[in-house]
Amino acid sequence: MIVAVDQASRQVLVLDGETAREAGPEAGPEAGPEAGPEAGPEAGPEADRLPVVWSWTADGDDRLADLEPARSWARPTEARDVVLDGEGSLLVTASGGLAALVDTATGTPIWATDLGTSVNPHSAELLPDGNVAVVASTAGWVRLYAASEGPRSTTYTEQELDGAHAVQWDEGAELLWVLGDDTLLALRVGGTPDIPSLTPERSIPLPEVGGHDLAAVRSAPGTFWLSTGDRLWRYDSHLDRFEAVGLGAEDSARGIKSVGSEPATGRLLTITPDHAGPCSWCTSAVTFHHPDGTLALTGTELYKARWWTTPLPGLGPTNRPR
Image (cartoon, rainbow, N blue to C red):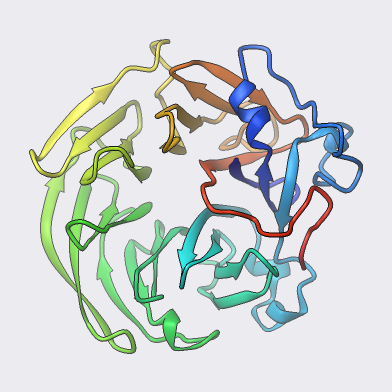
């Protein structure tokens, strides 16, 4: 399955895995036989045909009312599946200020905070102790929140990094990697879950400016996909080496907003703006590489998409927890 953030409908969309696997050069938004009007976002005339099996939004959720989701959930910037205490969860951020960890079985927010409209939360990561790291590109920092201490815990420790855009936990090295405009930073997490600390351990200049996304290569621990302004890279932290990754067309790696490889097959998934709609930083298609393919999602304005690897227990195409 694939998870995508759609800024048009202000929803997180989990897309059917079979449709993604079969996506080829002409793949369109056809849904499976069970998908009906309730399966997709209300984003346009093709919305009822999107291959959506589950979705989530902060809009209208009374459990988040104190965080003003009408404002704080504006322009969602991240959605990724994570595992907390053995159960699947959803981690989200939005430019409007919201960062949240959500139970995918019930849609219940486990932890959430509002960072305000001026910092631009861009991504987040869950640590093994239940705490949440959030990066903000405009503010230029990564914060590690003591999310394990309660649903509205606001205790955090902070490390500055210009243009902080992405964050990834390295389980083997027990390091928190953070991607900035021109630097890849490795942080050692210390302290306790209720009072965490961050200590810089490595600071690595990028081969070009414009760092945007960072994702683990699941088949090679300690190795990461990394996007910059014009290229996609594979970084080996053991060798401290960047290797440019070719995607076919000369400009196919330019401006990638998100990247990731499917754990089972290694197939790459990227989101790159198509500059065709009102959202100049979005697209209405998910692009695949090795093998190549495109999944068109008419009516959407996608900012990021990632492979979804955790189960959605008991949820069918029309189950949309709120």
